[in-house]
Amino acid sequence: MDFEKLHREESGRILATLIGLLGDFDLAEEMLQEAYAVALQKWPSDGTPANPRAWLISTARHKAIDRLRRDQRFERKSEEIAKTAEIAAQPEGDREEEMFADDRLRLIFTCCHPALPLEARVALTLRTVCGITTEEISRAFLIPVATMAQRLVRAKGKIREAGIPYRVPSPEELRDRLDGVLLVVYLIFNEGYLASSGDALIRRELCAEAIRLGRVMCSLLPAQAEAQALLGLLLLQDSRRDARVSAQGELVLLEEQDRGLWHGEQIQEGTELVKSALRRGAAGAYALQASIAALHANAKTAKDTDWPQIAALYDALLRMHTSPVIEVNRAVAVAMARSVEEGLALLDELERREELEEFHLLPAARANLLRRLERMGEAANAYRRALSLATNDIERRFLRRRLTELEKLRDLRS
Amino acid sequence: MEYLLLIYHSEAGWGKMTPGDEAAIYREYGQLRDDLSGKGKFLGGSQLTPTTMATTVRVRDGKRVVTDGPFAETKEQLGGYFLVNANDLDEAIAIAARIPSARNGTIEVRPLAVRGQAKQA
Image (tube, rainbow over all chains, first blue to last red; front, side, top):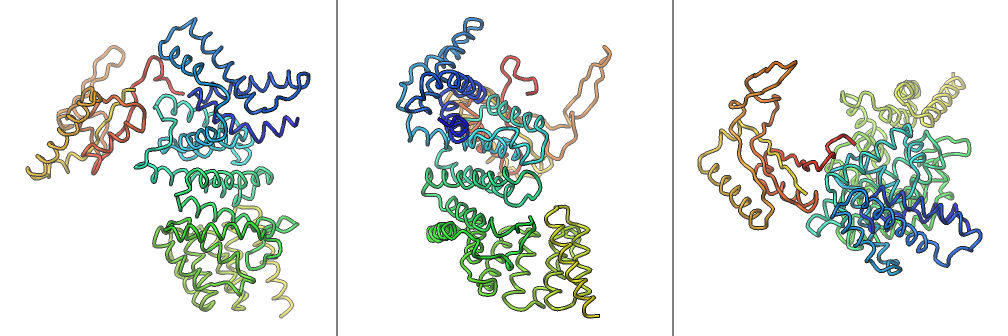
């Protein structure tokens, strides 16, 4: 029996069931720890039970009933006594797969409730739904453990005291609330995918957890096309994981990636999901981003890519909400679809905007286009400007390498 | 659980309403109140007079300090409240969303503290 593995893979699901059963996050966590302690003691001599998960749930449940009864002797509260009776009355052993699924969905909606601060929703989902430890979450987000622990305590306190329900929202509320859940899944993925400092293993895990959550949402709410679009987007982005950073840990641009390293099965699954989501009317930001990702993923080479359609999709995204990243990406797509000059003109226009002054991707994209136009002096200046703004180590290394290449080229020519 | 729904709105905007609009809003408030009462969810509530009627009282070092005006100058002012009985926060939010002033003002939903819960988590 691989205890570590069981702990890692099953804790989230067991915890979800216990929270559903006990209606109390802290009590559920504590009782699960106690059940694990009993297991560590008993299983080596008695043998591992046939269904370890059911065993742990049942043990934790009995511990909870004992605990609640003991507490009541000191402080008789009718509410708690009723709760204990209710827990004790639930038949054992019939909370199998479908109950697990329901518990998980309820737990996800509770953790992602809009009455909680966004950063707490992300942390709480990782902690309770995914079963990632507080230490690991704090390492992934580069936040002191004590701060992260406090954030979780506050969130659980608000769930309890403000009366945030443990329930899947009613059909009228579902649409709005689902958006909130999808946002948390998207943020978890991006934290793993975009951040380039911090522990690489944990970041990889965040991407995997986001995809797992995306799958849970799709299988539990199969009618929701936006959830499908998001899962498609995550799979397509993640399919490039082995190609986007070189063996030396350096960033590799999409156009220069070895497409043989992309994960074909994942691309296929992601593309199917996007197609199906679009057919069923998904038209939100995830669907548009996923469509762009699918066009990239299915192109044989960077040149072969359907750039006009990508530019049009960025236009549509911009109409939905403006963001500097989208504006820069759109200009790059225009450079590929029509002409480098046209793309550069768009970037020059963006540079005149005060709010984008500190945005390092803008001079980085300009430098790349200037380089292609062989305006090497201007390109070098733009790389220097990008370097002065970029804070991320991997990106800085990439920009410095590009700058050095340009300088060498200039030396050769002069 | 019991929730206090604090209704913040722009007093200036309220003052500019036509008598017809005002009557329609009062009617809507009345209907909501009746509906909640019928379900046993309405525990209390009232419109407040404008902040120009407010008086602020503090006692410092045993000395009473009385000043005119509200506690804080804000863009939207506390104009009324509902005290409701709801199963959970989602139900309280659903009631808050039915308050007419939610459409142009802001409703703050605050659970009432039950023995000792008021201390910061």
